[in-house]
Image (cartoon, rainbow, N blue to C red):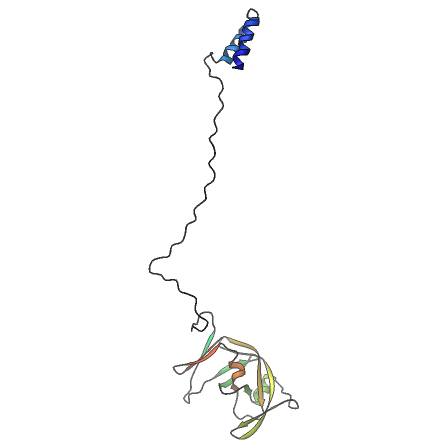
Length: 200
């Protein structure tokens, strides 16, 4: 509307003095020169972002989600285990590694400590303090004495236990025994069809 008023005023006040270019400009402003006045381009409103749907993994048919195993449930997952077959007398003996040195010994679940003979202790470089505290034990040959020692490590078929308490006897009677001071450091000791299974 303001544009038409300006053009009309120009035409009325100085019609005789306007040039051809001014007339052409006035006609352009009025939109009668064949060209449409510039129009503002409408901007389409931007739609707000829609939340992206997250694909949910569906459970295949035929599969069942099981509850976690109870602490007392038998399972070999996540455990190391070793197996010792029984000999003709029903006993379990094997070659262990004590402080990295191979030692032949017998599993004895009735013995409180691991027990080493003096010769085995010497081979391992373990020296008991015979002037210190000692244990008095009753054996088939009568009373016997033993002295406590600490073994750096005991290993067998992937099982590994550090700082194991043991005793060193005064003679070679009985041999090397792997008793509860070692076995109780394991998770379980079980017999299965003539085989002793040790788990850690």
